[in-house]
Length: 511
Image 1 (tube, helix red, strand yellow):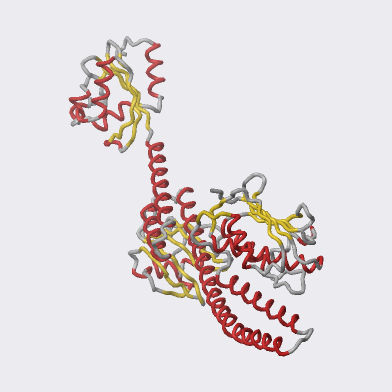
Image 2 (cartoon, rainbow, N blue to C red; image 1 turned 90 degrees about the horizontal axis):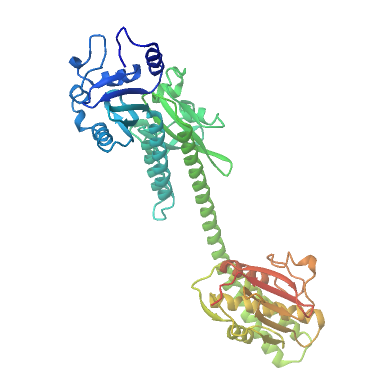
């Protein structure tokens, strides 16, 4: 393509089109001399060429590309262009071009005469990919820290603030607590002297105050330019860059999670970066809520332990004395009042046992082992108060994985419940209870031929304290439900084939 006076109109038109391209384009001959470059191509080449290689008018044509660009033979461009010429196959690659601080996608097309090169600026795309990779790494690190069971809450927050500072490229990250009009720095990763753990300041002098006035994050890129001059917070801390969100615990204000710098930011926080900060504020809020709930549970457990101690000693001791005296009285005289008193004392003993079970053990299970359903059911029947009832086991060698002691307790409570309701409902000598596997093998059932449980009451039978008999404790089925939950079983109640109650346990791990 000639620059001479005889250049054809078609060549001029082609040159015009090529010069209007946003991509760089140039051609090389077989000796690596530049034959033609469009306007963008000349700009790219001139930025790297030595001064003596560029023509007085800024032209680059005629220069040997490798001789005119220092150290060019050590670049990816050199290797790839030569590969294209040697194989006569096109090449495409991305490479960083230092003179312009730009990433290009280069495509080179060889021919017998030389090489045609297209350079497309992909800096924005590469920057987006870099940010995505940084975001992914930050999220992965955040997950690793948040799921680490060996770290305390404070240690997790400190590490998360470090991750946030690195990701957002700021030197200060801090968690605040607001109380009685004062901002307290709880945890921080910061270089700022006023943002160290234990530092306090009036809320009116803190960025936190403005943060809580926003439904979303408060973001500041250049505080001086954004009108923060004269604000008490700006005067105290001098923060030019800031991004922070509210931390709330159970709907109540706790404080803020913030990242900041005393220097302004070159560009706004991206949506991904803001989403990351929002994620951190929600995680901290969740952890604080979980910690508060754990503290309440621990306090409740302490009260339950104290209550269990009172029940176990202060009630059981006089109960034991009363039962002994009652037996002595029964031996001394015959009275119609003896048996009712004996039943009342027995009910009190059962009530105490159930209360202790709920307060100390709940539905917790320990080691799961192989349990033979038939053998355990027969053993539990021997120790339960079944009032002369009959047990039938149709287990067909059914075995399951369970905490044997807790499963035994579950069966004893069901047997006792069946006996109590059977006697109250029919007045017969005893109830018949059947234990066996579900038809699909997914679990087992305990059924009786007593009066059954009305359909309208079946949703309530597992509630603590619910009973339909005068001598029931109301805790037996609650214990059954909690033990089932502890094993991960689903428990339900329906009508048995004999019209009584049938309790089904599904989701059982059979062995």
